[in-house]
Image (tube, one colour):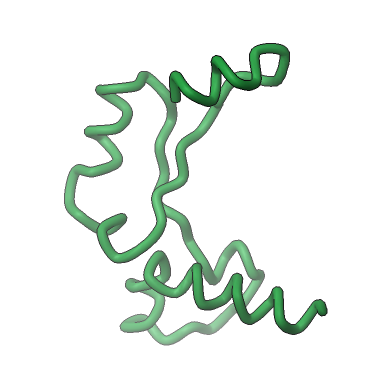
Length: 79
């Protein structure tokens, strides 16, 4: 965060931290980041971000783990 604020001094401040990947689901990780940084922290919801409905519950719970694969798939699709 210090690196970003120093490098982009004239830009908007960081207003939210979005946790992704398998470790994003660690209990209390979002609270830890809020306490350490004072910045709102959320766990990414891959399916909501991609506007995908009716995702099976067992897959929906692991959404943060799929975000990189989804991003790479979208990148390939858009090229």
